[in-house]
Image (cartoon, rainbow, N blue to C red; front, side, top):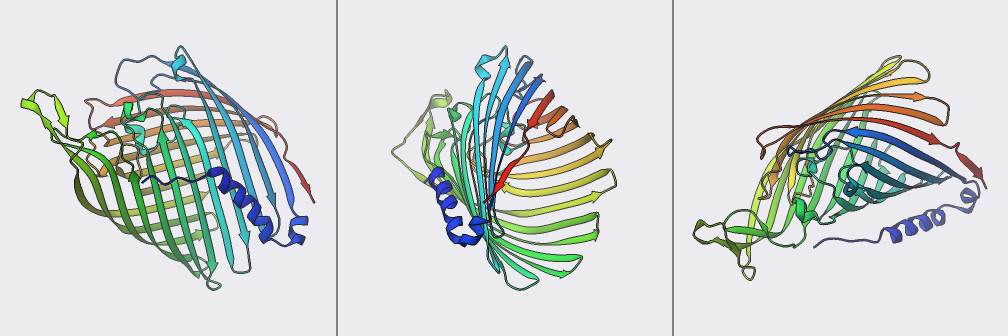
Length: 427
């Protein structure tokens, strides 16, 4: 069953709760702020759909106003943001989209505890999002998706050197006409507990345990072979990880964690028949079969950061079990490198490289496995304190197991961002 929640009710509830928790003196001493900004962008992409089929280059234009609000005192803080994004594509009017993004966060501190909550709600499009995600391997057309998430957490200082953190998260993702491109609505619930202990000024260790449920609600039968189709799926995963953080110097630090994962999946399937091998497949929806699967694997996360006088270097690698709109969970392996350099007080550049691999973990949906790498150099010029100019180039290479040849794409973007001075007052 897909879990739903009212985002607006959650937002108003948290907004009302925190001032009540704080004492009147803190409320009166609060600082309130607002900061609007706007982005204007022009781009050119020779394969925006990441497809091997014949395609044309597309020129894109973006207009995105944004407003950030905040309020804080010594013991509580609230933030909220709203952004509207208008995407227009020359020569491809059917790709035009209007997107909306909302987010909020709140925290409250007592002597030994910290309560936090974050929430977001968005209506976005698949082609305008440059972030690499597990669905990149199957999305080849413009697709609108609605996403909602909320995540409360509690951190308790068990002692001066040991902390316990409990976190719960809930997310829902739904697609508009997603079945046309093989994407399905899903929800994810997860709870985790992490204990962190500081050994000395240079070392800290942590242990975490988590439990999550991935659910694809009942839909139109999804054909997975000539004799079986599935209508819904639920996966449950348990994860244990242990790690260490090492501070090598004031400018160098690293973190490494490793662990094990166990996942069980339950699918509701119905039998199908391919009459005499003609391809005319008939499924008997009145008959249901429950299929059980189990899988196990490793998870890890590592990062290294080095700060130089004018440069910074970061390296990260991870393996995780991620939710996917393909109707199954996937193992997601990622390696990322980042390099930043300040040429002058106004001009800076960066170079990023990402290599990721998606492998189907549990679920009988074929064609999702792929490997992708991306290189993206960029420059940004702080023209004035409020005005920044960004220029970037992005090269993407993706090889899908289900396709005979790889896909490549080149994209160039020029973005102008104006951020008004922060408006703040206290009362």
